[in-house]
Length: 417
Length: 100
Image (cartoon, rainbow over the protein chains, first blue to last red):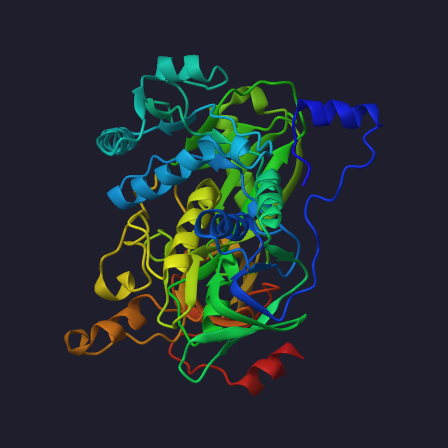
């Protein structure tokens, strides 16, 4: 692996940028692995990286049915924040945010991580009360979040319309300054490169079609479109297809899959300095380094794996953007797309052991998994390596839907799902 | 936008007239207090979430205001058929017939 640095960049530039090696190899699957991770998105690749780096388990394969980061990793709106209401969630998402902060240096890959601030708007008295409660809860949990008046919000985000005549006037906003965005493809590629350098096999175009178990009930391996592969431990990190993979091991899951759409505008000059989320008018928006406005919609109402959705949802979102930011009303939209998100009843993820020995699950992240990428992988790796959860993910079990110890972020996550 | 045929109104109407209401044919237990935690979990939270044929409920909220059931493919989003609430789950044969 070539270490990226100023001297290597300058050196290669003088060589007309020829001779850059492949960033990771494409090995044939081996007969057996110590651990297999199903799903080559950001979460699965980061789990492989931390398994090799922190737990010395490098005889690991990441199996991806399509291409790396081709699922929700490459389809989200790249927002990173940790201002969740519940104590368990605040710890979980802030753990991830802490890892983001040193990640580009750690894996020697420019993730374009930018802590430009995440502003959440309040448009009603109820919004004000809820978001202020968030601010206080977050601060008690050591998570930065502050309350801004409409004028302060306007100063932080100049394109924002704070006119009291607006249909949903801005009454205030909660600002998490440590929040921001990162380049999502780079997250998958950076983790893939770092994991491969530690000996992890990254195998694309390899769909898991079955999970094999021994006479003792433990997992023994997987059947795939590229043959049978043995493994002592298997971790599912497959977002929309979590429940389908769990069913291969005879487990029914409290997960349903819904479409979620996003879109980008034509690129414009830097005009939008932060990330803005609004629950009431329902839209979220930031500007990418390419200049496109990146806009997220809400999940569709019906279950689907189609990775697409109807135009009326996009229209609704764009109407909200025009209401909040009149300067964008004449902007053209460049493209829109959909992902398929795995929703749990309490809108919190599951990072846990399953009832099948040797089988682990990282799923149910719904519409909010990207922000947690380093944390999810870090905690999944811990859980797989030690066969027990880390203190941070211990509450995020599969059994909580039986015991009733839900971590209800359905309303508390400050976005409608 | 999905086009959905309401089995009561007998009209194919746009999705915005309808509200999705989750998986169909999940029976409310007659005596909830008698259920074990596992049975209660299964009733409340465990769903089939198939990639393919799905039985689901829809509510014609901006029409006749009644609930009905539908068979839909969750990959193509095509409706195979809709039918009134209370009717039994269509068999595989019924579904194949409706597709052809």
